[in-house]
Length: 233
Image (tube, rainbow, N blue to C red; front, side, top):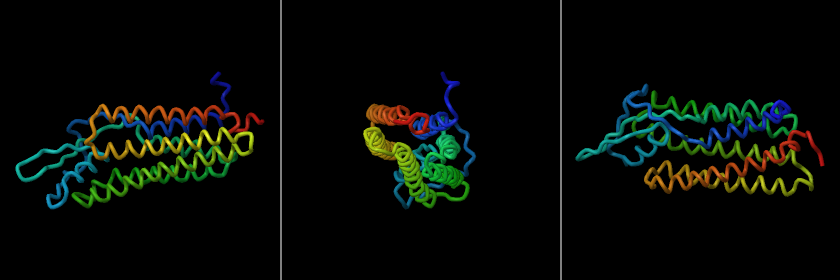
């Protein structure tokens, strides 16, 4: 059955796989390995803000002292790296441009996300203390914004290929499921950054996030033949 899939269908599936890579955050601690220079805690500023930002972006641990909090890197390896997801999306979307020029936007924005991802992960070599925390905080928001833009462009491209009254229900299902998914993704993103939520509640949100994402990808996959124009109504 799989050998009957066209290159275009595989491209759509690759994009779905790319979004799954972006969504999943399963990290393994790297122990004491850290190529970054030691983080210099800025004691005149909110140490919790520094810790939350450093932990969300790179992994961190802290040691409470009598008068201060020292923050250290605790790097983790993401089993499903976001950068690989964006690369998959960028390459696959470029193969679908003939069905909708909006796929070109998906590809370009995905490559932009790869660049932004790289900038975020080399910043500790050039910035430290609150400079790194502030830059990481705002670039982290920008990174989520890029993910949302890539997703929106993908949904727009899909709806463009499913133009016509006969695909109205399919378009509604795809748009609504994507909108709810991006809202839940934003909630989970904030909860991970704050890092004060109970593990069980965070798991509940993550399971809900996974379910909604799968529903969105199901709606896309269900009409894949019409997206790549292998079927028409």
